[in-house]
Image (cartoon, rainbow, N blue to C red; front, top):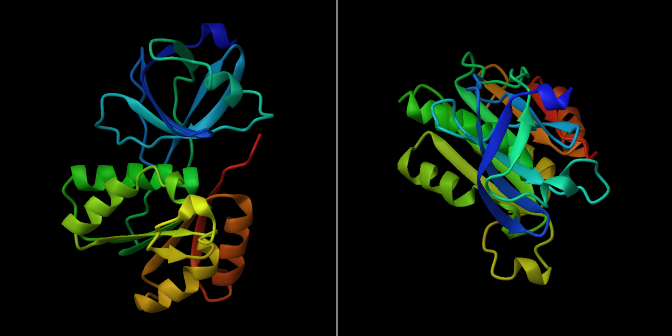
Length: 237
């Protein structure tokens, strides 16, 4: 039962938009995990899995959460404050992890799907590795949904093997006023960027994380071209 699970205190909360927030939690029992894995947290008997944003070396677990208005857990999470305690399963799970066999790591995300990629890259840089090149394409409807844009752009400026490209799908809307970056759905621009960077299936692993529709389209577009696509679906529930 949830009441018998270890606790995890909320140590930080950042509200990005009305339906997106970052929370940092500190489990009472340290959680061992690999970058790309997820933890399962709960509140009042309801549990859901969330990909971990933080790297294993960090002191707290960082989660990027989207509100699902008719969901069972996220409306409850939107009511919590710093200092409150969630339940957490004692083991991280998931196989959506870094595969070092491919020198080119091509990562495609929608909004909160950026979480496991941020964890992988933070950990990669922490370990001072340098034999892979990361291409991160992140799509969102609006520019204020790119929670880790500043961090990833800084990584991109400081490390020539990290390339970050955010794209908005509704550039004409007022909420995107002033946007100077890429436009269009992320799954639609994938092939263009693979060609732009002269990537090939033998040396490139494609990861896709986020909306199931995006993942399905990426797999359909790239599967026939010989690319291996590793995916993690974020279902709204």
